[in-house]
Length: 631
Image 1 (cartoon, rainbow, N blue to C red):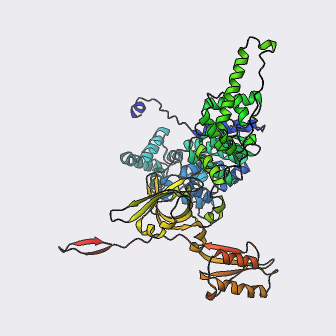
Image 2 (cartoon, helix red, strand yellow):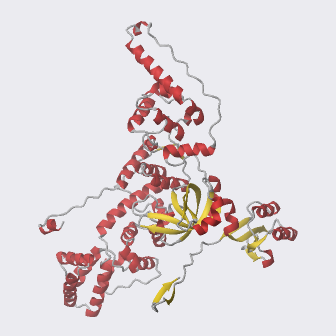
Image 3 (spheres, one colour):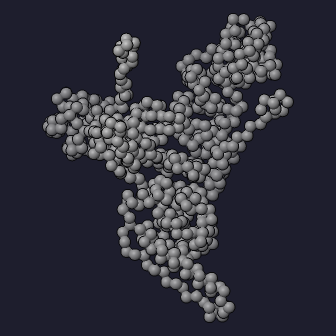
């Protein structure tokens, strides 16, 4: 690199971006839907839908703008122009965030902090960034305007600041101050400005680079805002080999009320497609199904129409390319559901269907070779298709497990579906947001115990290692002896639990150190620290409250109770009940109250996750009189 520079040659860096392929695939899906395809080179940079999406920080899948930290900055900054997106890309880096530059920009943009310029000449240069020296080009422009720098000298200043080269900075300080003095600028203010440039210029970003990134960020945000289905389908195709990423985008589909359908031999292509307002899985997502198998399935379907049954499929498709293993995976994931047979039925007759298909295909081949075929003497007699056995479909949990086995995740449902409300109420993270947590952070997470191993320590105490899996992924949990002694009766495979744990993070690896593990049906009892009972003043009388009193008294506990009195056209009134009416979150209590009042009249307040109390270190004398550290 450096030798090339010294020779006076231009060095080019070529960056490959998956996002460009996502854009291309999205445009193809839009065209297939018969919609007008947007011209990505001439978008409306004031598009209302796009900026509405950005201001909500609905930016999962949007280039450069999808991390949790970036979403937080977006919510504070509220981008309203393309220039704001350029600034976001430049601001979301360690230097601007740690130095306070990002905070200053946000406060000045929203008028909560005054924009001040040391020199009037700075206004046109820094107006776009509210007086903040954000871009390297601004440093170069300031040096040219205030100190008569040539473009070559200004680029040298930019380089010295960006690489923090002390000797070059001293030389430029002298050059800058001399140039400012020649232009009759106040020497003290000029020195102050150079100090500011030195401080913030070191964090400065190349604006042309930031703008190029911001353009792709805007294009992807535009597609997500205006063509959500096609955009998410293109994202899922681009990440089809990455289970965690596909799960993340499936979660995004749930957020946007988009249904994700399983692969289908009668509809799916190789990649994810948009079908009837839903996203349909591609056949390439099925484990063990290669391109050769997909090509023959899609080609036969295009030529001869949809497959009517598993037997019909085996008659028509090359069984050397679509073998038994491929068929098993397709049945388990639901790719044959559109034929009307149950998965259990098709798995039961799979061997028979393969034999049938091979026999029919051999007879067709023999018939084509028959010298008398043209005379009709060699005409084949259609083979009769056996009927499916009379049997029930697999139970839901087994069906879902087989689905996950062939795809790597669930599509038609999830074992946690019926517990989702409880998990949402008490958990503070899931396995996706867990990645953003810092080492030592206390969290609460819900899921299913999928892997469990017990281990005996050197002292002979039992502990456990397990995996907790939610809708997105799994995470390893370490249960030390002190916790294991309390919770071992409920540690079993497929048990749904919520646990409080400390995050242990080393580089990209995350483990959880369990502090408390609670079965899902006891979570409310464990972590509810307040109960709110809504009372409609128009519908309920004082007599109703008198009847409520003994119900509360029958369920004593340590949860404060409040009445929320709802009066038409007036603010709600909260009335905290006396300590003698402290209650608990027993489901039987909730049912009695709702039978008296109405369904949905009870709200619970979840206890926050408490930070782990660290043991204080004490100091004492050792036997030889020196100081030693102890717990």
